[in-house]
Length: 163
Figure 1: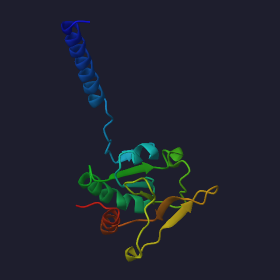
Figure 2 (figure 1 turned 90 degrees about the vertical axis):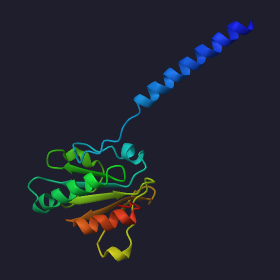
Figure 3 (figure 1 turned 45 degrees about the horizontal axis):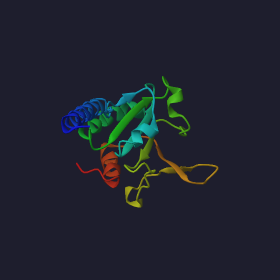
Figure 4 (figure 1 turned 60 degrees about the vertical axis):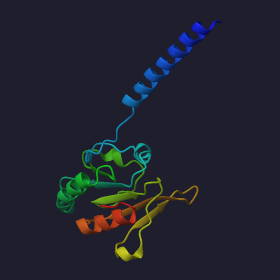
């Protein structure tokens, strides 16, 4: 193989690598920061390495309706810093999967590293921690009932989100 052929071969390989790189970059999945969703893929959400709050509610639930503008406001402000999702569980009952929904609204909290959020006692809120039956490992941190904007901001702050 002479020098000219080798140089041509290297140029072709470089061009192919650039094309593949551009394709990968353009097809990289973007984070969907929309608030209202019909399903939750928790593993996909965890892959973005951002704190996650999922609120399960219903259109007939008064506290859920009171929380709606708060969730909308915080979702807009936290784009790129946290993932805030709302699921109408009356329209999408299967969306909760194995997350225990015992009351409405129900919020689920996940840290940026994918682990369940563990609240400090400073919040003066009651959270429930659910564990996997087979391993006893902490699976979910859940809050039942309405949260105010200040409470949600305090939780996000504890989860490492800066405003």
